[in-house]
Amino acid sequence: MAKGIKDKVAILGMGCARFGERWDADADNLMVEAYQEALTDAGIETSQIDAAWLAVAFDAVNVGPSGIPLATALRLNGVGVTKVENYCASGTDAFRGAVYAVASGAADIALALGCEKLKDTGYGGLPVRSRGTMFDMVGVVGSAPGSFAQLAAAYRAQHGVSKEDLKHAMAHVSVKSHANGVKNPRAHLRKAIDIETVINAPMIAEPLGLFDCCGVSDGAACAIVTTPEIARSLGKSDIVSVKAVQMSTSNGWELQGSGWNGSYFHTTRIAAAHAYQEAGITNPREQLSLMEVHDCFSITELVTMEDLGVSKEGEGWRDVLDGFFDADGTIPCQIDGGLKCFGHPIGASGLRMIYENYLQLLGRAGDRQRKDPPVFALSHNLGGMPNQNVSAISIVGMLGA
View 1: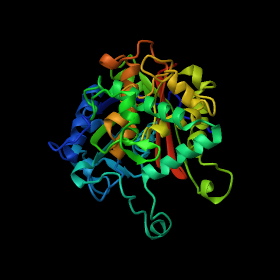
View 2 (view 1 turned 30 degrees about the horizontal axis):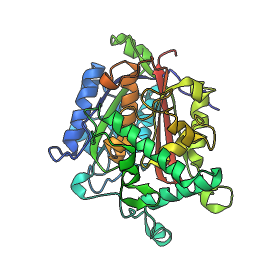
View 3 (view 1 turned 90 degrees about the vertical axis):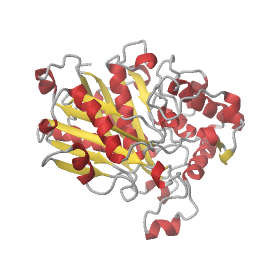
């Protein structure tokens, strides 16, 4: 494996807009809201930014194509802006571009911003968005809830988990996230729910009920990165550095043979192995302090715990019910409320997750701050369907940890 980027890049500042039904703001407003917080946090001027990446998944219906919307909204004068579209991994992919630019020496200070303005469009996650002529021919009856419901069925079959046990574990995932989201003023949904409400909710796609699904939202999040040396020269002493950024993209293997049983995410396992090697993590269950994972559906979060190697295969549902991932558990997951409470403005989600990990590492997360000092904080995105997708993982921690 290549040498990697561990501790070569520091996060100089981050910002996050309030997520929700933002009828009061257009995409430019959301981008500026996240950017102004990041810029103030970084303590620099716009003229010091050398390069930028913009993450947007649905370019034709909200923010717009190319890097021009970001350059216009932030008044980036002559700065090269790359627009990234990589499904739900777009935000982390934009972060990867900015981090790699700094690590390579091509830029001293780089910016990554993710934004999506979906509520105005009427987009509700259904039906499946067209991916071109061929996909419309083979995936015409598909839907996100339907595809991830099949993941739950395959997981039960593979590991012999009863329908009732898995449903209760999935419900615990959603109840946990809502309990955390109550403490987060930037979350879209801030209302606690109970197990009975989740289990008795209207069915969307068996066994996924209403509260097993995240919603659609508007939002933006931003990161400004540089080298540790430049961060120190700008007066930073507590420095959060990037330990690893890794991605894995399906090449169609899951659909081409009998090797995949449908109960896990092949790409997440590959990306996790590479990320741990890059960060120097040998036992994620012992070494990770926090996780933000892609909880588009409750079953996704549960299965991801095993794909990340935090739970033993077939045991993730038990860890969930034991409270291992609760806010006061061993490794809190979605301590900010997750996609379940923030909703999923697709291009923004990956950077929103890194934002929470950044706050937690610096002890700036307010009422939801983890008591034990975090060491390594992981974020994970999954774009696409269980049978073909993009997985992206970032790991951040204090410089030198």
